Length: 448
Ligand SMILES: *[C@@H]1O[C@H](CO)[C@@H](O)[C@H](O)[C@H]1NC(C)=O
Image 1 (tube, protein in one colour):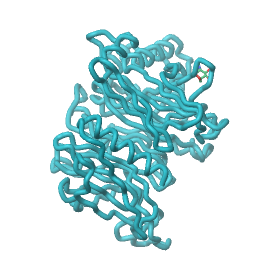
Image 2: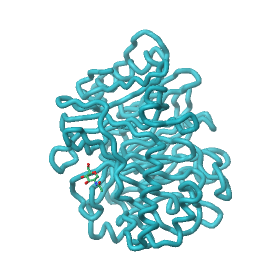
Image 3: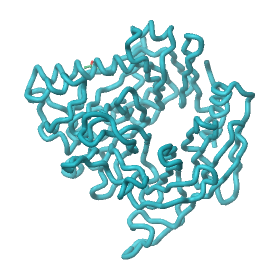
Image 4: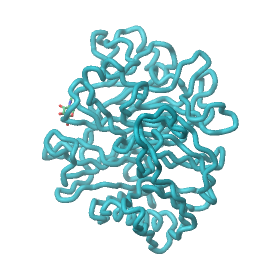
């Protein structure tokens, strides 16, 4: 209930901000069949101010005044994750009534429909009418994760046919691993359910069969069966898609301490194994406190004031990433009340990627990192490929087959800290040249 409450309050405030309207609230009412209330996802239709909200077993469509226009039931469903829906043929396990937690909620603007994916039916997705929320079609593809895992998704440009620039939109999905063979796919680009695509929600492939995904090696799991990555957020900037994740600091130690990382994927290359790069994103207080667990992240444009502080010139990409962090309880993944907000410019993030690749290029014996990955074909940097990668601005779409997980920190000191409340959400707006950051904590309080 607490989480739901804080989400609701943010929702009202965001709308007041963007639309200059009075304060409205939306409260999901409890009902005996749905006592597991948790608002999990929301998305705004910029064309008409409608807000879509995904919850447990429910989907809502709200007006810009937060009045409920439509409610659609999405669960519970009779399900068992060992069995293949919808027929469950040859299933030895019993189907049990399972709450359907919304994991993905995006507007597919190209095809004027909503895409929703939940934990039930193995994380499969549905398309829905944007006006009535009624089901258009269900697709059997394992896209989201099961009950406990994390999933983030956006629709953005994929590559064109020959990987020379951006092309049709795809669904970018980051999810924690699903305990199921062949499903250890962490990041992928998936085809949208449009009439041009024969097999919606399958992974994008180029003409020669190179697919857009990264996966955990099966034999890695053989040894480190608890390995996992939690994806906190996904966004795009200037032809690249970024994921913020929390994962074990050392690949081969599946427990903590944990670190936050930021992954970059180039949108004009179908082969993730050519462009995937990640580096740790650190947020360290002036008192040395390491706020290591990202809680939320989002991209926005810097106002003039912040652009100056962050050394962003007129011609630079003005996108900044605003991330809320918590300090972990010892080496666990459990956040404490010590929390902070750190801001990074995309420009700086990209400079650090290049610095890391320079390190890799100057020492062929440097490990590439990413011990978990099946696409890191070799474990050492080597030296024949990097000039190409660096030369084309981090988007060489060749066939070198190296993803890299660097060790160079992308650092920032907090612009805001709180020692007694966990910041769970963060938003920023740029207003008359000033960047205003809003934070919300677990108890539903907002600070500006
Ligand atoms: C990166 O940051 C972490 C956490 O602040 C720190 O423990 C580590 O020493 C840093 N690594 C490098 C190479 O600076």
